[in-house]
Image (cartoon, rainbow, N blue to C red; front, side, top):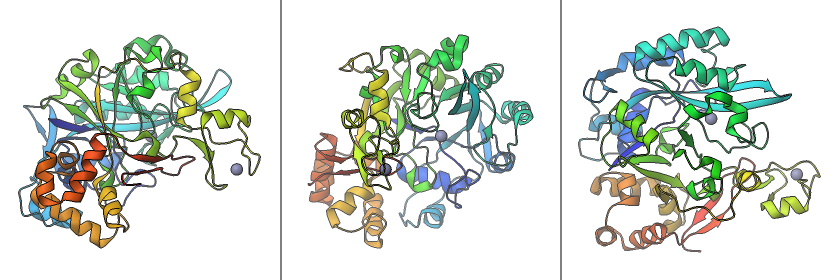
Length: 413
Ligand SMILES: [Zn+2]
Ligand SMILES: [Zn+2]
């Protein structure tokens, strides 16, 4: 089983960790159990230079590897974990995200698009053209006054390059977003829509929610962490049966063939924009409650931030999802599970020590969450084994995220 996290950021994007260097990303990916990661921010000149200095093209896979392989010392320096073993060696694929802000059909549209390139040469060629539309150095995720359709056209003109709409349901910056999105992909991409083959569901939605829309049936649904720090890598990811190469990766997504297994999902309720509400007013509502209040906040009377569930239901043409072809497994980050078991904060020293102990024994965080047999876990920690069994069986309690605030998933409530 191979995991790929294909949407991340570097320290050159706004509101990201200052620690996000190439080796930092690779180290965290190794700990999480991610075999292939997006480079993030490949349109940013300084980051691209850094990537070129640190990475080397792997002829066998068409991906990039670190010039100097990861060591135990890297894991200690970057993740403060002493694991006493040779780390997994993640590979990289050139990936960026572009924020398109433009007016179409009389309305301001804001959406994020993921782009992928086969090699530095192609990325640089593309960047040179993209730089004519705005300043690429200002932000790792550049904000451009560029129509998403035109961006897609530019990507299609490059050799073996791909575009995938990012976190398609988030309110502020997505193709279907409640604040500045479209009601259909065709309205956004027009005659290029048939060239699209994959959609990123984002943290606040999962495959069954997306399968409420028959117009999305032909798309493969992918999931990525959109990590702004190494710790958040792999909170969502894609699973392949085998290590793909650059071409077979995108072929697998395009043809939805058996190489692609499915996704690791965040519980959508934990996502920051699942339900409707106002964070500052302490208001969190279901779509039905929002409708009953005509979309206005019961505290401040201003329009609510309408979340992903509302928007999915608004555009859905089914009341029950069709059975998903893709597999998915909902996970809670391991440190959050340990924090619940120990009754202390997930960022505390105690939890970090527990986490370190587990990762000395087991291959990676995602292996613990998804694959290590429960009886094997129980030999190390019975309570943890029970918690992970509950999670794997989806016996969890959910408190919904809303208006930019994460929800909370607990096991023993
Ligand atoms: Zn984004
Ligand atoms: Zn309010």
